[in-house]
View 1 (spheres, rainbow, N blue to C red):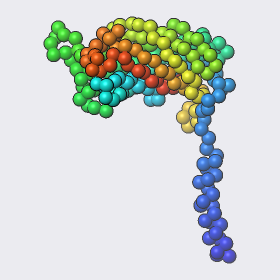
View 2 (view 1 turned 90 degrees about the horizontal axis):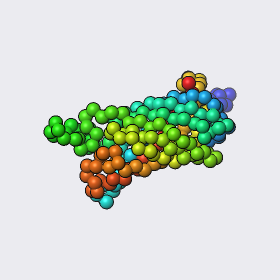
View 3 (view 1 turned 135 degrees about the vertical axis):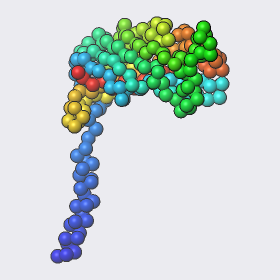
View 4 (view 1 turned 180 degrees about the vertical axis):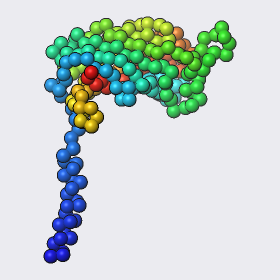
Length: 213
């Protein structure tokens, strides 16, 4: 009897984690049928913009912008009518090097000079869409990017990543996620320090998370 009791207890110890794992499911999926119409707010903790430049022709170098805010209006029955308005706090730029981060946000040496990159109190950047051309689960989103006081049109190649409801303990709201790619030239925005040793071309990789209002 004791042996059977021990065997049963051992079986339960092994089986319980397996049952718990089987019961858990990822709430989001790459299923466009889960997208619901309405207004969404950017999730600042999970929306990121990676920027990448070429460094001396030796290696790529990348950093991040985070704490992004904004909103998205979307109707899955008419995706080309979608609107997005995103604000990027340039002052929150992150790199793996404290020295480089400090250089990006360094004040000019002389009051009459311009900073090498953004300066110590840069204005937020902003992207406002003007046109969306949707095709299946991808879209080209064109809009005006304002960066360093200059506004230029930029087109994003956007891919649908996933949708669904967050777990009840996380609010139980509808969520959407996208990936996007774009390339800009920093000299067009008045940021020409180090070209061509540090590339003019900047590649952008975006992870955009939205929660329904």
